[in-house]
Image (cartoon, rainbow, N blue to C red; front, side, top):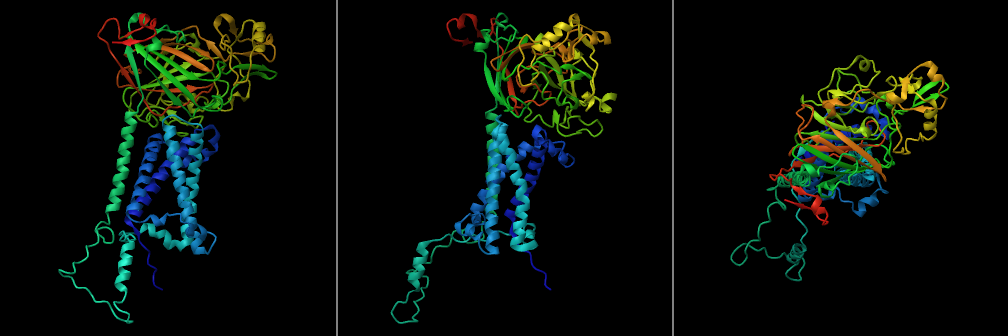
Length: 632
């Protein structure tokens, strides 16, 4: 029996097809890895062993952009090569779905093509929206379109197998030359041929006289190259590739041109703002500002997004920042402890796994790096349950922060309860992976990779022993108890333990040494069941060392936090990034969650302007009285 010859597919289609397959595999795999991070898609963790744990963000976004360019290349190619009939959804084909098998599968194939085109278009539009900071329905559509693409693959293979069996499938592995493009329909040529075919007289069978070229009968002009010949077979592919590359260059140029820049103008020392969380200082009315949308966080009334407004100035020595962000509730209760009939219980939801999303304080973070980094993921954040094979797995399964080049990324963390209401912003960093402690190796404490506080001391500590997964299913013994049980009970009566209900400004969710005593059974017996006490202790020390480089105060009102911060332009610490032109910033909002913060993917460029005049570059006090601002 003779072996059946495998039909050939033009080289351009084969090249574009397999490029599309490769890009889709990377985009879907990295997209699902990112989706695992979402609280609703934790079931995807079953795919953890087969999904990438490195080069996730740094692959997903560039590959997504490349897919858009490839789609443009493919559209150009099928148009220039005369192959548009392959995907044309004409009425006859669609009607064929209800007809014979050969027509049915051909029609289904067209429907599948356009389903893929629609899914890819959805991914492109929503992916762009996510990149520039808008989530919500865009994130949902982006997620759903991914599953459409995943389901398309087996359907596509099945339909092609039904059309021509394995020989049809093998065509895409057998490239060949592009067939000559058929000539375009010309009605005048049809009329001319018809006239020429008519007999010169009425006698049947009389052939028209054949015209010989000559002075009286010039030859017809040759057909244009590329219309019916084979002169430009490669031209459609080269044109298509050029179109895709041109689109990539355009997108990169557009991204660079539209990048947010935070300008720090220089001010007189007498015009510096008071760091009290109140942005009524005159300087904030004239300072340059930007607003960035952040998204894909937890809580925030279910929307998971918050717009952050940033203002900044400097006086030549210190930089002053004012951050204002949307947060529907003032959340101060940080892992409270409640007395029950079986003992003291930590009110927590995920804290034992390093992923608290309920009984936790509000936070705000600023990431500073000294050079342009389009995507910090895979440079400061590494997804997966165990990104470092020789280090402990993460308790949350969400990934680790650490750097891979031996350097440090500066991270500021403001906490609503753990020091933030007392005038401090915790100075931390991402650095090389640290060696795990014994408790971390045993899974009793979260291994944090390269995230750590700068050298020095802080103000607070937990009022109970830290435990690993499931450890808080049994009672804990508080380190300290309120010295006056009656006041503790009265404070409990005024509390609302619903994490989604905001706390009063005067609420204190920490115990200080002067209003508490070390734990004892005798004192514990005096405290009624149902009493709730803070899960935080104020230490006897204070912020000190590198960790104390940043001062800050915040106030919440009408669904917005306002945080004012001051730090030296250059602290001289290797853990801190100098605030200078060319540095880049990112911001993140935490609404009573431990780690599920919002994100703004694009970096914010910092530009620090200097002024030669001793009085400063911005005049404020006198000018504001006239209702306008002026700069030199």
